Image 1 (cartoon, rainbow, N blue to C red):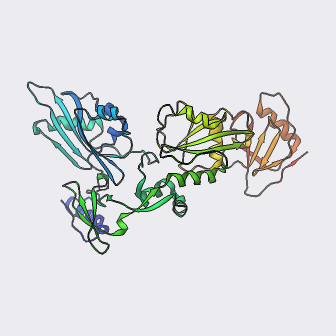
Image 2 (image 1 turned 90 degrees about the vertical axis):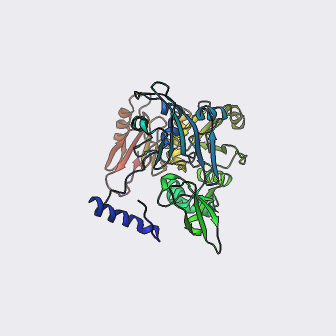
Image 3 (image 1 turned 180 degrees about the vertical axis):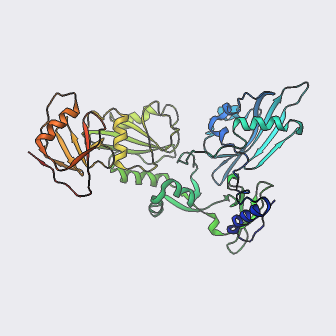
Length: 430
């Protein structure tokens, strides 16, 4: 069944009404996509290693790999996974929208079964007699009736960084408008867009200009119809790496070191100084190539080098690295994680490693106290004590504080206190 409506905004209404009338279920037509190739991107060849009785070896001979709105790679090989490995293609980038699998079926003189999969809903089996067997295989591997993916987008998966405004807002959130003003995100017109009724199919509509600002989207998939488009449908933003480097330097207060972006996978931010130490921060736009460590150490000039990964898939075995929780971390977050990655958390003042929201921080080793970021006269503590909580109790009896309660104890030197009420309290040291 197909719904033809003048406005895409009323399609959901039609789906709900027809489901209720025909099947007494308003959500009948709101099911998840039938198939997904995400598992092939995440696990590669291992995804099609199975234990389904009746099927032997399975291999991929053809696929469509979409990267951004201007790249659609058609890969055809006796073994696509082998070819991708030889060409060192980052399969986790972009989206696999179509794949052709060959399946050996156990039986006398049986030719391999060809399975053609086009997300989100087309599965074609060359030999109908084996459809039930192929369905069991696709269910077992997670290609058919796949569970909703819990993975979130990050800067690596969005390469080559041309996407709709909605996509960028899901990554940068409230920072998006600021990034547009600073030209970190540049306004562009997309060359291919997804169909509003088939978002899981990828950028299936190729854009063609008609006249007077009107456009027409020609579908790449026969089961998805073409449709007219407006200029608003094509609005997109493209990331500018050099402007992002400048923004991050300002955000982290970096003024020394660093080099301009050289079209590589790294942004050299420069030297970040804190607590008598300095680190050389490098932001990874993509997975760094092997052997990059020596070049970065030379630029660091003896300082600790830290790779910043805005993706949980990063591998920085050559250097200390930090997996960022956000593509745009705060300076405090960066310092705290970088200090731990470089094993400096035991030699820097506790205020640099205290958790977010800590209003009172006591460093028992240095004998210093910070309240809302302001350093106060040191409280006397007992030296050479291994039990930091005992030291804190001794210091507390000698320093008059008003109505403080323990919230967390991050490490052996840092004790964090928070007010029970929102009022500012006065701390006076003897």
